[in-house]
Length: 102
Image (cartoon, rainbow, N blue to C red; front, side, top):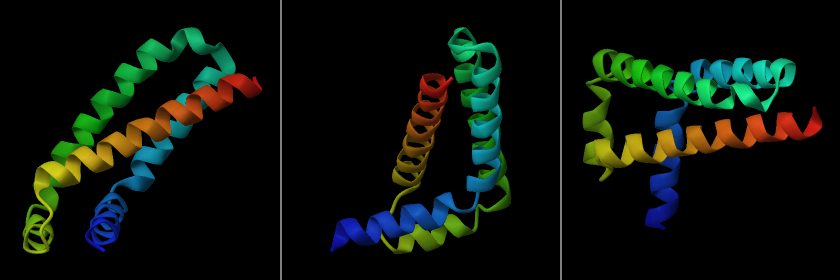
């Protein structure tokens, strides 16, 4: 039961920056579609840099929401690790899928 609760909290937190992150992922996938997988290294670093900007923006604008998650037993480290890992996995999956359909 604890795992389901944690996953729900992580998804709730991820929804706050999912649209921006997904738009960046789709743009990177379109670049791979057009120019090929040789652009992947640069796009991966671009995605990491934009995730850094997203982390900075969320931490500065939604800092009061971290108390909500902390009171429910989810630390900031778990929030960021879980959501960023999922986001990067989604990025890698989508870019590789686009490359196979290319």
